[in-house]
Amino acid sequence: MTRSGGHAAGRFPALAAVALLVSGCGTLESGGSSGGEDTTVTVLAAASLTSPFTTIAEQYMAAHPGTDLRLSFGSSTTLAQQVAQGAPADLLATAGTSPLDLLGDIEPTETVTIARNTLEIATPPDNPADVEGLADLAGPDVDVVLCASTVPCGRAADEVLSRAAVEPHVVSREIDVTATLAKVRLGEADAAVVYHSDVASAKGAVDGVEIPEADNAVLTYPLARLGDTAAAADFAAYVSGPEGTRVLTDAGFLAP
Amino acid sequence: MSTATSGTGPPPAADTTAAPVPSPWRPRASRALLVVPAALAVALVVVPLLGLLAGTEWAQLPARLTDPVVRPALWLSLVTTLVTVAVCLLLGTPLAWLLSRADGRGATWLRAVLTVPVVLPPVVGGVALLLAYGRNGLVGSTLEAFGVRIPFTPVAVVLAQVFVSLPFFVLAAEGAMRGIDRRVLDVAATLGASPARVLLRVALPLAAPGIASGAALAWARALGEFGATITFAGNFAGRTQTAPLAVYVALQEDPQTAVALSLALLTVSVLVLGLLRGRWMR
Image 1 (spheres, each protein chain N blue to C red):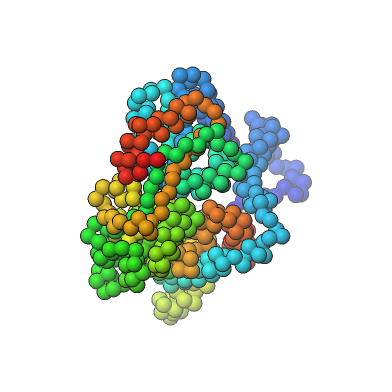
Image 2: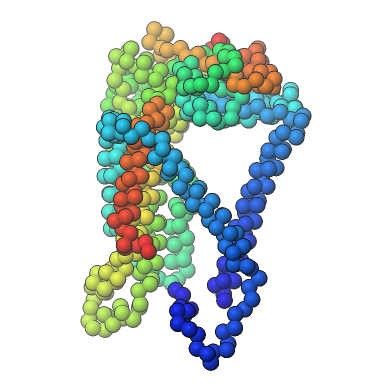
């Protein structure tokens, strides 16, 4: 008796949960379409753009109350793949143009260059391993962290290091540039090769050691517009316009 | 479990108390109400697995499995998870035994603390491990003075795996040890067996299925470890890049290699489950 009672009781919460899920989805959808006034623009951006894009989005939303920007950051490669697999996105900003090749059949409506970036060596504030240049990264006592060779910052770092004929003492290859920088911020690694903008936006949490221009690589950051909504086009113009460029250069990026 | 009599024979005529109670549910309708969510539950588990099988380019599979990324990752995963299980058995079994004998408030608290890694997001575990064993960490700063660095080494991989899987082992083993009839142990003791002998010759054999089940759970959890590992041990091929990390990185560049590696992991896991089936699954 008690057993069947238990079953009957168990049945209701399960059904209620399913009903809740279904109705929950419904509300979400109708909330998005019937809102009329509020337009949502989904922006996927490279990890290195995290801080400037967050600032630009705040400024834009303050000036355009009708637009709701949804930002998501990750490695450019992963983001491009997610878009190719059907992840909803109106705008995609990547580090370097090569991730855009992963979009496959998806043809961007428009692509503009919003910034450029160079590489720099980041060390913990007191630079415990006395890193002064690329050559020092080969020292067996210098724990170096790079981005994975599959993501733009890793590819660029490999290119720069091989051009300088340096074989670094690498202890880890992290999944994106923020994870790479985090290892230096925590003091677990002595040096990392990241973007100049990352060192600039870390604001004192790490020290930067510049890489000479002759050895360095320059990445261009494209902003690809997917689909054809007016709100997305407007935000893209804002990012590539003077307001966006100012935030990006303040964050240590080079103007396009 | 069920103490109800199985109604195979005809009910005795004299038994009048067994009049059926009318159920508010018509059996067929209520069964449909159960079958639909149940089927949905099965689909939620099975569809992704089918997706993995359907997405595999079988002709290329042998070539993919010899990809330079695959073998070191599988090997590292195998070695580190086996070390993790050994640590669980060596350190976790005595702990489980002591917990199963203790009933005080201290034991309750200890059990609660040990359960934390089960519910903690693995990345948080990785941050905690860094703050403990990292260069500037609680223990790590002392180790650093002796020239010992744990992050970015296979030792870090094992520490991350032990952190997340030891609780699974201890809880399962303790459960099995509690299930032992206390009188059996008392009899062994009155017959002159020392406490150590009672544990080794009586308690452990009786709890063996539970210990094996705990070890299997711990192993599976260690094999799947991702978040704590990538946060604490980093990602370097051949040294700290375990199979799940290799799957994640390979997916960015060469999805078919990621699929092949995933398939290898799936096969190994299913194989181990199958081998242990008689022991801990019914």
